[in-house]
Structures are given as C-alpha cells and as structure tokens.
Image (spheres, rainbow, N blue to C red):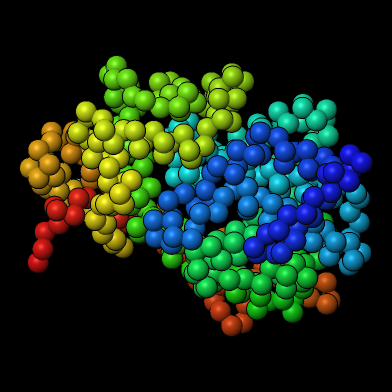
Amino acid sequence: MALLNKQKIINDPIYGFITIPSELVFDIIEHPYFQRLRRIKQLGLTAYVYPGALHTRFHHALGAMHLMVTCIDTLRSKGTDITPEEAEGAVIAILLHDIGHGPFSHALESVIVKDVHHEEISLLFMNKLNEVFQGKLSLAIQIFQNKYHKSFLHQLVSSQLDMDRLDYLKRDSFFTGVSEGIINSDRIISMLRVANDTLAVEAKGIYSIEKFIIARRLMYWQVYLHKTVLCAEHMLVKILKRAKFLVKQGVDLPATPPFTFFLKNEISAQLFFDDPKISEVFSRLDDYDIFTSIKMWQWSDDKVLNLLCNNLVDRKLLHIEISNKAFNIDMQGKIIKRVQEKLNLSEEDASYFVISDSVSNNAYKPGEDKINLLYRDGTMIDIADAADQLNISVLSNTVEKFFMCYPKECVVKD
C-alpha cells in the first residue's frame, strides 16, 4: 500500500501527465528542501513584463525530471546500457539541479551570500539529503559532479543540450507567451544517441538543434535580459543593499527571521559551507520573505528605502537606456547630480537611483562542451561546423550590451 500511495501522477501544463518514477523520488519531492522551490519564481521579476511568468522552480524541476525519464527510455531503445540505478541517479540529479536557488532565482544570487553560486548550494543540499536518505543519493551526486564513469549521464544534467535547457525554454516560452522560444523537445530527445560515451544528435536532427539554438538566443534578449526585467531586478538588488546598510547603522527593519539573519550578518562563502546552521536558515528563505519585507519597508522612515520599495511594489520602475557602448562616467555623474536636486538627496543616497551595468549573451559556446552531430559512418561534427542553414558560429560570438537606469523625472528631453 505504501508503494501505491507514492505512485503519483502530476498534471503539467506543458507535458500533460507526469509520473513520479520511484518511491525515493517521491520522498525527495516531499522534503522541505524541495518544497521550498514552490515559493521561488522561475523568472524572478519577469512577470513585470510578461504577466503570465509566475511559474516556479518547482514546476521546472518536475518538468526536467520528466524529460530525463523520457530521454533515458529513448537511449535505452537505441541500445545504450543504462541500469535502473543509473537511471534513478540521473533523474534525481536533474530533479535537484536547482535546489540551491535563492529567492528570485538569479536576481539576488550574489547579494544574500557573496561569491556562492546556486550550483554549489545545490550540491550542499544534495549531500544533506544523502544523509537523510542513508546514502541513496550517492550515485546522483556523482553524476551531478561529472565524477561517474558514464559521462553522457552528466551531459543530460548539465551541458549545452541538457534536460534543464530543454525544459526551461519550452516552459518559459509557454508562460511568457513568447512564441519565438518554442522548441520541439520531443523531436530533439528522439534524435539523441550515445557514441563513445558522449551525447550526440543524429545528423537528421540538425534543423531541430538549429531552431533550439536560435530560440535560446531570442529568449535571452526578449525575456531573460529584457531591459525592463533588468531594471526591476537591479532595483530589487538596490533595496537589499540599502536595507543591509541601514541594519548596520542600527536601524531595526521588520523582516522574517530567515531574512533578518542574512540582513544582519555578512556571510562569506567559507562560513556558509563551514557552518551547517547557516545553510539550514537559507533553506527556509524564499520569495515570500523578501517581498513581504519590501512591502513593510514601504513605510520606512528612510527616504531611499521608502521610495525604492514603493516604486518596486507599484511597478514605478526607473527609466532605462540601452547602448552597445559603455556609458560615459561623466554622464553618470551628471545624472546623479540631477537626482540629488529632484529628490533632495545626498550624492551617496542619490546613487541608489542610478544604475549602470552590462549584460552579455552567446547562444552557443563551442569547445569541450559542444553539441555533436552523429553521422551514419560514425563521425561526429560540432553543430557550429555542420549547420548549413544558419551560421551557428556567428551565434557563438558574445554580444554585450550596456544599460543605465535612473528616475524618469530626471530624463533630459531633446
């Protein structure tokens, strides 16, 4: 009866019915570490531009798990030897690949804990779960770290053509309504093979892969790096920096206990990993902690925090300008002066309302982690060299864009 109770089916808007493949996977999903992903939005503040983008890391992890199950079945049907233990390990590795994400996903990654990436925290939580489940996640951790002898299993978890990317492109496209990001994940998975312990795509799948790379490029500029999203998320970062500054000055800011802990303490990477209590506090932190606190800070006596929080909650975002060249430092200084005058702030306080940064993207990175096309004679060629309709090598070039945000009332009209 216990087994039957854990054979759950989940109705997913992208793939239809998803079956949880094993009791262990069910128990991992039920754990508080994984349940926290329900409270972390997949796309941060992207809903400020695309109102439907309210899906969570929980959705994404389950979707990636489903694709992994499908992919393993496909590879087995083509003669690839994957044992039941290896299959479960790969499924758990992809299920937990994002378990270390903090609130608002990438937006606050370097703000709450400095110099610690979510992949490192994911591994930390996987090791903690391995203790809880008495070593049953050991193989999954080996696959996640690329320390298992079948390297293609790691490629399914983390590569330029992994189950993570196949799910998030399709899912993010669906929830944002950006049709340019739609990919045919079923077609791509059906074309996958393993040759010489390396993941490859049958040559006849070349056009599906070209479409996948183009879709990724378009989704980055249209969704992930959309100028309004960049502006909103950088305002969020400024709010947290101001809150930390005020707490250091002795100001008592209302916040949830987990968030208060990270506001009051500067946590280094070494301390985060050395003290297990800190990661436990982090495991209770999610979007709700951050935004609840921001709503309370709307009534702060501090003018900077008050304005930033009110503007973010009410979506009164800063003006943003995009350029292919870096903005002149003198220009930034002039805008800060203008903000000082308009908002009656000191130069230091005015700098919270002027943001200058850059973003970069390349749709495909040639190198060791390449997407290989497999031909009938057994030869493998990098997609960048084989693509005949699109110049994939051009898409491998890094494109950098610079932006500056500042209050709309400080815009100089021509």
